[in-house]
Image 1 (spheres, rainbow, N blue to C red):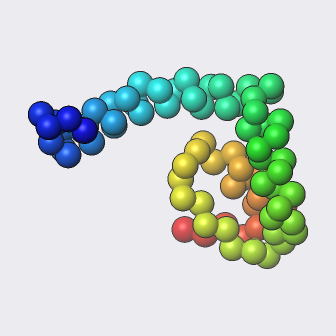
Image 2 (image 1 turned 180 degrees about the vertical axis):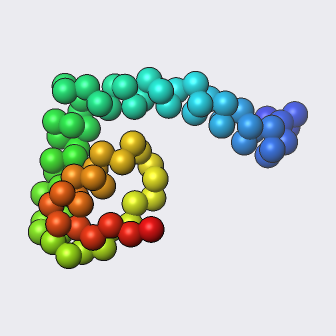
Length: 79
């Protein structure tokens, strides 16, 4: 943050930057050859183990594909 930028101005700039990047990020993450699909999610999923009957907190940081997979694997959805 520069001296001329207020926290509100900086927050707005960051929100604008994320809005500009988020569509490209989701498209890249959804590709068959994405790092998330090939490495990160399989490692995360293996660490979770059996999710049957578990309640899972989804913080809304993606498109919902991972929580949908967890529900298919037996996790309990919530509102």
